[in-house]
Amino acid sequence: MSVLNYFQFARYRIQIQAKEPILMPPYSGSTLRGGFGAAFKKLVCSLRSPTTSSYGAVREAECRDCTLNKVCPYPSLFETAPSIDAQQLRAYSDVPRPFIIEPLGTSGVYQVGDEMEFRLTLIGSAIDYLPYFVVAFRELGEMGIGKGRGKYTLTQIWLEPANEEPIPVYSWEDEMMQNCSYRMTFMDAQDRAETFPTDQITIRFLTPTRLTHNGRLDDCPEFHVLIGRLLGRISSLSYFHCGEPLQLDFKGLLADASDIQIVHHQLKWHDWERYSFRQDARMKFGGILGEVTYSGDLKQFAPYLALGEWVHVGKNCTFGLGKYEIL
Image (cartoon, rainbow, N blue to C red; front, side, top):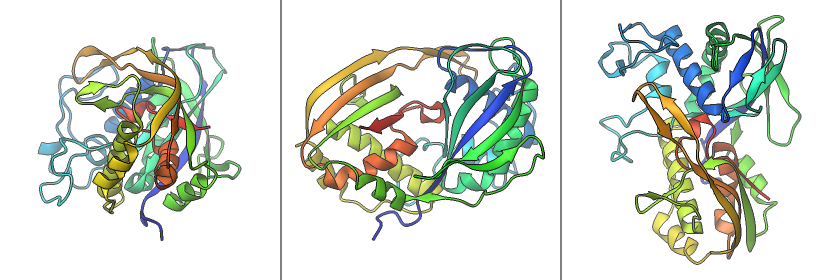
């Protein structure tokens, strides 16, 4: 029987077309995430603050004081926090947001007519808000993104099922949505895990991955660090966004994980910065890139490693950090 019976997620590929020149920074996930958040709040928020960003986003969080915060989609997606009656994970000051925006294009200038693509992964209850995401990305196209706020048209959205061809979801030609009910589950991760070797795996980190150990960022994570952060993320996503606690012997698993060793790695640290409007400061978001090979009895960890390929691992996953693949 599946350990996670109600864990659901869906992944989409989104295509936009530049209506004006768009200048994207070296890592565009932050730009897409920041602009999208501002567009989303502009669409749904009934409150307005006199202090706003250049996108029109409210600087200070107002959701906790709003009478509509129980029904508004914004706080559940962008300011998720444990409820006062949460029975588990009450020590979390916040919890992972149930979406990931993953850039697929390159940095630089997109000229008029050029197309850009990125992925959107929605987890649990966030899948029901897909129409909001579509409208918000259309709104962001009118607001503009990148340096100079170049405008774009949202042209296509495809669903990306596991092991199947992409399925159309949205087209600008008719602005109709379809195939919105599809979900992937933990069983898809279990099926993927069946293809993994059980004694040695190589993990390739594709976007900067930020894993902490003993309060510090780790530039060469031991397996127990990686799996500990991954299980923590999956557990939190499942409990707060899928309505199901992850029932595992965490201490036993981490003890077993300590027996798995690094046999080879080609990891490097990649630094980059983004501007945080909420904190009014430029912030560093460096992380590891490259490959690491672990050896040991990996069978019990394989389904969670497979799920992590979709939901990422570590800090700042909402703008695409922490993406990896099992080779």
